[in-house]
Amino acid sequence: MYKKITDLRKRALLPACWLSTGMAWLLLPAAISLAAEAARQPNIVFILADDLGYGDLGCYGNKNIKTPNIDSLAICGMRFTNFRVNSPVCSPTRAGFLTGRSHVRCGVDEVLTPGPGRDEAGLPVNETTVAELLKKGGYTTGIFGKWHLGYAEKFNPVNRGFDRFIGHLSGFLDYHSHVNPKVGVDWMDGLKPTEGKGYSTDLIGNNSVEFVKANKAKPFFLFISHQAPHSPYQGPEDGPLMEWKDGKAVKTSEAKQDKDERDAKYIKMVERMDKTIGDLIDAMDEEGLTDNTLVMFVSDNGPSYLAGSAGGLNGGKHTLLEGGIRVPAVAFWPGKIKQGVVTDQPATILDLFPTFLGLAGVKPPSDLELDGIDIGSLLLQGAALPKRTLCWRYLDNVAAMDGKWKLMGQYDRKTRQTNFSGKAVQLYDLAADPAEKVDLAAGHPEIVGKLKTAHEAWEKAVENDRKRSARTQP
Image 1 (cartoon, rainbow, N blue to C red):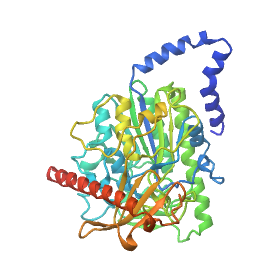
Image 2: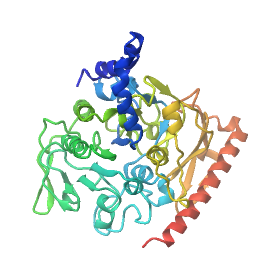
Image 3: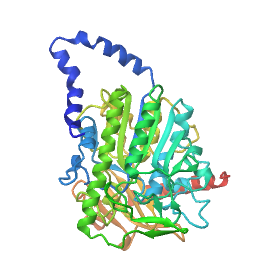
């Protein structure tokens, strides 16, 4: 796997080398093959890491964690420095990606934990997923790994547009025993519990490779939803930390991890995830699929306070500070995405829904109100994105961003009102101060007012849509 960077560089440069030596005739069979590929919808692979910080990859400056495979995708593709998620926690981000709509709009405001009375908690069944639309458009769809969008059968991935699902419904589990402390062993094959022996990151990677090989003859959409490097912090060589006995989780070790031990295990977890990505690219190469496959890698939010690096950004998971919502993102598609591009265009995970559909030639329903935009022109031509104001709400916090300016305020969940005044308001110039250390609100009341007005309009729109959605919920 550690040859991946060199191999991909050579492959990306090879056609130009042949042409420069007067051997363009050798490209004729390839041209015929490319023409056939052009007539076929592209495969789409979306890889989502869990709690991986902006500074946790080699291609984002990390010197301790070795991620040659993800780095190779960045070197031979596009790396984003201004990519954000719609939420600083798991479930809302996944809801946003799958629907192209803010989690506020589609009603997944918080982490969906299992337990008594939680059967009705999930991604509302009247929400349309990208998997459903791609499936109708001729794609075979699969998800492997973490779901975290509902526990009842009606919320199961196989009932939300996915042909194949192997993984876990809960937000986290023991990487070896697959025990979640509230629900027990949580490893599913579709609607049925299964044993699934092995390190969960490896299982997710292996199942993804098998899916690619089994579905190489037609377009596929593959969602690889890793738990790594979310807690518990366990490397592939460690044993289980908990088992399920007599209807409850039992710890197999009472030893507490100190920071150095957590950090060491975190490194192993990220590196193992990177290895599975290398295995996937190898499998696609062997099957001749790489040149007709878009691969995107993103993290679902910033790092936990326990482990990981936000790369100098302020805050982390659970916050709307940059460390919580600005995440690593890489796009790779040989021959389509120019190699070695680093873009500072402001994109979000909500943009992937319309982008994937656009690349697949699938139109969303005309009455579907999306919060993302199609960024295909950025990926394929390097075109600038249209100016827009991006808005967030998570629990008691709100934010709005336009260009370099980011406004933060507070939200009262009882009155459902925002507050952008007094001590609640903060304004940052992200171009000069990406770490959000200097509050400029007092000196720029006109910018505060502009962003406040934009956020209030967004709040009104998403709340109205949410109410309409609730009325049509079965």
